[in-house]
Length: 213
Image 1 (cartoon, rainbow, N blue to C red):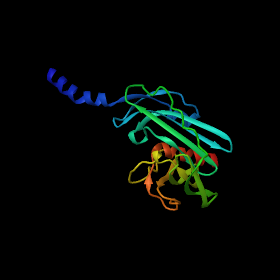
Image 2: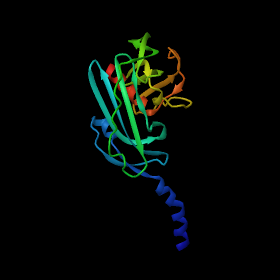
Image 3: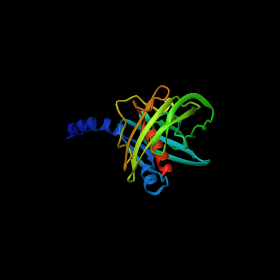
Image 4: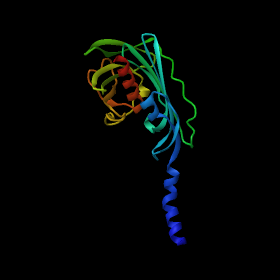
């Protein structure tokens, strides 16, 4: 019996170490609009994270803060996205000890200083308007979001730091949302799409979509 106990301990102990307990309020935010913290065990490939998204529309600022388990691609992000009528700044931070995601990060300030970069943006269903990017927005973004029975294409400028290199966008990362979101490099390059983006940027795109409707 002692030998069986030792073998089980060897097999199960690494698994126990891989589960990181973190604060989470993603589900409460989605259902009630309030971020009530609970504790959850993250997958071995994820860390404790906290993120904040600030969106400005016609002088009105909306800020969403979330604590959750985050994959490495969504850790340490900081930048902004401009889709014409709305501009969003996004930040995330991660840590790797139990319940370490206590504090929320502060989103970077939203710059209005043009940087010479240009991308296409959409007005209604027409996406031929040229938008001047500002601050650290050195990439173009193109999104197609379906949410709540509605669909819309959103295009604009985005910071490189919010884009990640992978083979394709995650189209089902947020419950109830079907989306294709991608970044590209080069002036007015977002008539077509290329590089996939992080889950956090997908969430920012969905927030911008919601403010349009």
